[in-house]
Structure formats: structure tokens, C-alpha cells
Image (cartoon, rainbow, N blue to C red; front, side):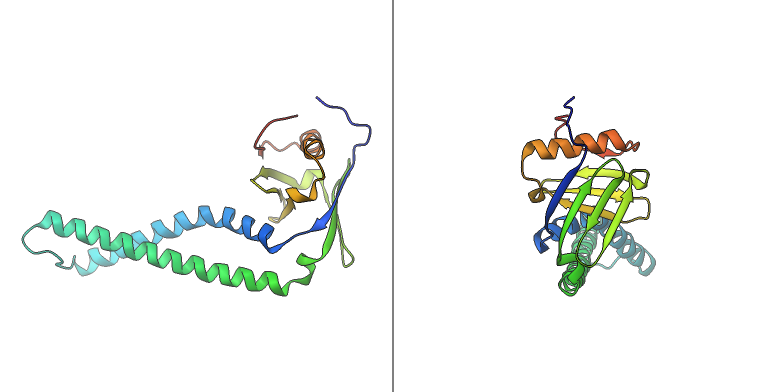
Length: 185
């Protein structure tokens, strides 16, 4: 285990649309499976209640297969349409939110995670942290209030600083939901 003289890290930077979009896609991946299955169930129920339409005559098995394909295609189309609408809503919300686009500094110390900007100063104590996930280009820190803190990896100046971040998280949180890509601590 690496020991550091200073138990504090300052991570200044700006969150870009690319950073926020990456989090959106990680979140939407789980939801999209649910929506797809929901639409499949709805279309299957409608077909079951109204009776299966005759697409192919002469073979009940082939007709069932074709109806199943129709249900899957319609479910995919409706799921993609819903995801497109969510993405448009999300991108408009980001473009209007000046606070999200402003420069900020994340400070991790024994007290917790502090987020400072010209317009706000927030602190999340370590006991408020419920989970930490590492994605390809971003860290997502979930809080007890149902929010999350997004810390892009481009805020870190070196790999050592990123390892130090992980070490501080491990040392100060009691949560079991820590998912880092590589355990280098």
C-alpha cells in the first residue's frame, strides 16, 4: 500500500458534454434492456388479447415465428425511439445548465469530497458515499441522496494521482460497492 504525505487531492477542470454523455450511456444501457423487455411484453399481450394476426397461411409454427419477429422488431423500434427522446432531452438540459459547464475543483481529503466553483461550494462527507464505479473515462461516485458525483479522468494529472484517488476512496469509505477497473492500490 502506498503512503502519501498529503491526504488531499485537488482536481481542477471542466466537465464537457462528452463526459456527461458517457455517463448518460452507462446509465441508459441498463434502462434500455428494461424498456425493450417491457415493450416485448406489451406487444405480446396485445397480440394475445386481440388474437395473433395471420401473417403466414398454412403453418401455425411459421406464423408464430413471424409474429414473434414482428414483436421484437416493434420493441426495438419503440425502445430506440424512447432512447432518442431521452437523449434529446438530456442534451438540451446540459446545454442550458451553466452550472454544470462551469470550471470546478474536486478536493478529496479526510472530511469528504468537496466540489468548488464560482457559484457553489458543496461537500459530501464520506459517510454519504454509497458506491464508486470506474468507467473507461470517468469515475462515478454515488451519494446517499440519490445523486452522483462525476469525476472525469482527464481531471487527473497522472496515473499516480489516480491511484492516490482510489487509495483515499478505499481508506475513507465503508461501502462495499467499489468497482475499479484495475486494482493498483
